[in-house]
Length: 291
Image (cartoon, rainbow, N blue to C red; front, side):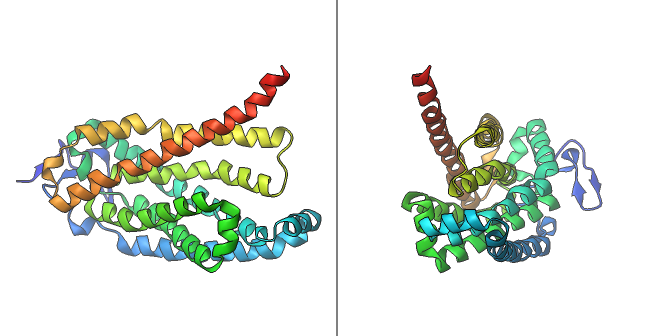
């Protein structure tokens, strides 16, 4: 038996919060937007490769003294820094593509919490997922080609975490889009890419040895606040979706994949936030001692 939301509204190809069906087992295939997804995935991977190449050409010319000092002390940064610049692509593009859908899906999940696992992802979310995963495809290729340089730059532990993050997302986000079971979770994970705007700027300032003064402090504060707002503050909502949703109307495979994978990004965000808090404490301790 197929139950429906109180009202069905569809304008063109966009479903409004009042227009989400409650589809017994799985969402119908006609709501999928695979061509749009793959267009953005391929386009994003190509854009990141071009950004890295252009950055590698321009940086030595725009800041020759800083570049020479950096690569003389740490030659691996000649690869790591241009690669870091590419991380602004998903940080800006992905949230711009999905923020409306985050509002849409969140509103629908709050209105009909039992139906939260049956909300089909809107087109913007397919595009946003393609953009984010396209970057991850590029990043995985970069980490294979320049494994030694990027592992040295990131550190062994972070290098492994990034590999886990990318492979996990590349495997399970398309499944979440296809089944609609994890659309609410994935849309928030995509929006959280916005935190990488300040994080990447912070990383570049460190690699360029520009860590003194007010600008670096402002970037640190911006990163901490954005991380809390986009990755930590939504956790109670995501937990409520997880608890209140009707899990009985999903297939066994969908149930297992969704139940086992959706908590992992939240746990990883909590761990990264713990590391960020430790960083803040290290910054405050010298000031406390001086006082």
